[in-house]
Amino acid sequence: GQILIVSTGQELLWRAGIHHNDPSLGNFRVRREGGAFYGVLNDWDYATVDGLSPHDDLEHLGTMPFMPVIVLLKASGHGAPPPSIRRTYKHELEGAIWVLPWIFLQFDEGNHFHSHKDLEHWTTGYWETGARKCCFLLDVPETASYECWQDLWPLTVGLVHFIRDYFPQTTKYKLSDDDAYSRFWSIIKDTYL
Image (tube, rainbow, N blue to C red; front, top):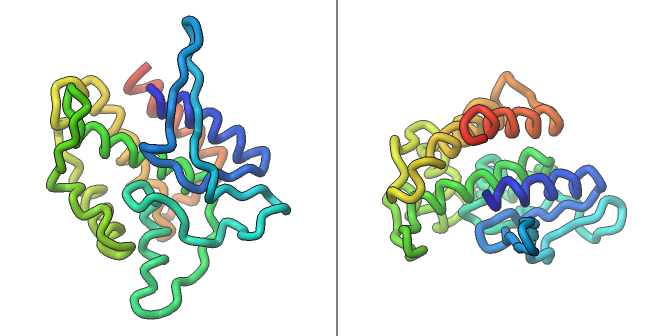
């Protein structure tokens, strides 16, 4: 559930002009105080603040396994200087979603890491990682790798299909940031809550 807690704060900060730009497994934390849980978004090194930051969300920043596909592919440049792409909240949300398959396919009940064949090339370079993620979008495994994650796997599949169907720049469905956030929560309500 930590991605749900952190994603709410992530969206609120984005609306306020504060962009984290590096959603990743290592940057999502949950703090428990009494009976309540609070999401914590760590590591603000790549963050920008509208109108105040020296960089302007055009840079190809982030932790590679969790970077949006379009940012990875454009950052590769194929031998040419990479074109600029302005990051939006949809990119931030996509990065958060990529945390789910990373956890549910590679961490066992004891929180031990085991490389998964579909994800083992997600850290090899912009083009390779982007291409491998595109393949993953088209062929999501039917089940999580470990029993402890099976109840959450339908949510993961739904959110990965959401990325596949609505996020590519070539798609006919141009989602606003508000629509992306609404659809994200709709998928969560339909498959998890």
